[in-house]
Length: 419
Image (tube, rainbow, N blue to C red; front, side):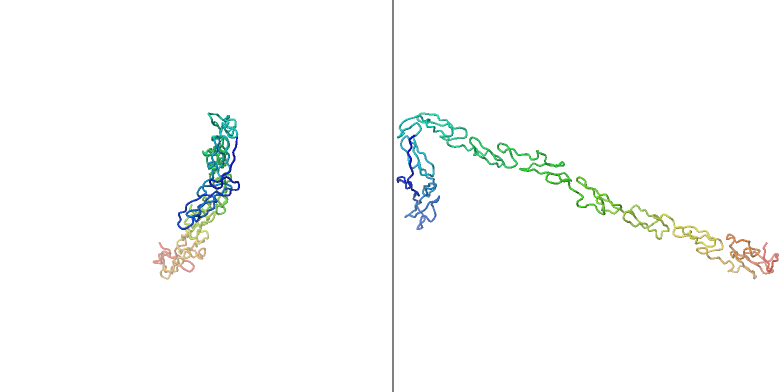
């Protein structure tokens, strides 16, 4: 293959030079009196020079060459330098160098000798060359394209990688770098982070992107529900109760006298009305006290009737009758008073007439000392009186001395004996 090498001229229409630094292009300014360079029209590092009615851009040639009015285009050396017959130009955009090579099927110094178009192996990247009339075509290997199979097909152009994965192009293939949480050739599979059952103690696993969440049952906590919650840590039990931790709840063993879920309630031991006979109940911690004052009863529950008669308050052999908060004395006839302490003076009214002497039956001194009184005193006979009549009178001994029927001679007096 015959090559003709060249370098683009720095000035349009001038011969090639190897020390070229700039390409020049001229533009027209419409900015009035201001210079055309005032708007900085030259791109890609081009330098601007004002001209009459316009400006000129000196476009850079290194490291890349640009052209165009404002240096906006990469320089194409082949477009400016057509090759002779049977030759084609090979160059790279942005570079000044180019070369003229024989067209496929031609060879020789002047590229005038016809040859096998495929003998030069024009197809790149193991492409298969197929000859035609004065030309050839390339059948490219998978992953390449272009007339000469020069271009590596970008398999990533179709964005095959899913879910934010990064695609890396390879020859006739691609590979996907998956973001965390996905897998598969195209990262199309959402990894089930719950597949390993990370949630303990019956926790419910929620599969999220790139992670999982555990919903714990009551009584457990932690990322994996592996920590049991100590419900007693907050000291919920009151009044000295003992707290027992359970899964999801706690229980309180109340001290005596308390009740409630947290032993917060003082048990009212008086609610059952343990005090009898109108005793006043005072609630205590784990107990009660009965105030039996002014009830007539005593005992822990005011259940015992106070025996007011126990002290023997009734006098003169009276009978004591128990009552509530008090007692009554049943006096023998001839006695009176709350305690039968008062001897009724039957002689006070002077029942004995005509100077008769009155003797009370309740006077124990008369018993055994006087002939008309029994030898022994008896409260059953203590009521009433006896009259000792003056001589010449008689009558009912305990009433009066009226008419004397007959007389009984005594030592000093005569006792009236009534018929």
